[in-house]
Image (cartoon, rainbow, N blue to C red; front, side, top):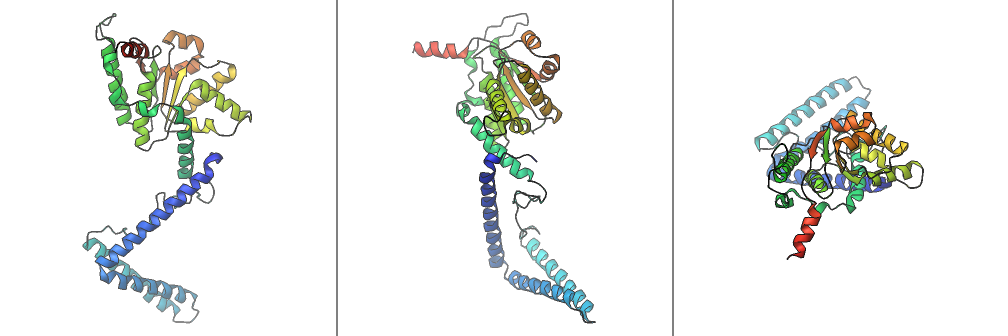
Length: 329
């Protein structure tokens, strides 16, 4: 599996800390059982002796070695059975004293023998995502501070629905998206003018998912494309392309503000197509309308965007509203 080498040392240190904490928990459990079940300590010593007897009998070349092996194995099994009975009788699961690993695949080493474990790749991706997300106003964007009162409650248009009603539906959809998120799906295409809450709701989703332990990457399309281009042409270190194609959720803000070169369009297609093939969700925010998206992007790219859930944002620029309200205070 691909791994971001910039964060490898820190990720390995994190796994080392995890192993240390798990070892401490193992020792706490061991002490707890010995104090609560005195017979366990005797059985533990018996179990250790039977293991020694099994090894010695396997190395023994005398005619009685096989009988010794059978006897030691039988005693070992009986002792283990008795330990299990004691644990269950006293309200503990049978595996309570087993070694504790956060990742059983690599036993918290980060390496499976042939390659880096997916748990290590995930940690490095989370570190890279956290650094990339540092400039995003994550802390300010929550569902509970999304102010519907900023949207006009007067019905208008052919469908006779108010901007506030439309935005209430958008808010509820985004809440459900975050609540039901499982790392699979096509995602959301948010369409609307500047200042209507697209970024706010996107980052509200991001906050919810980050708190649940998902790896979320947020960035404007121009910035993400610039970073990938610099890395591919060896102008900077990093592996942004791997990060945006493998994160649990990718949020691409401000689609349409990028320089639409052939290389850029090809990269956008690679990112969106790769994620959709893997069923990894994307949220794309744009000030462009449907016709502008069709005009500015290739059919194979725009068609992939249009297969996502489309939310239309309507109303007046909230940033202007807030500025005017503040000035009248």
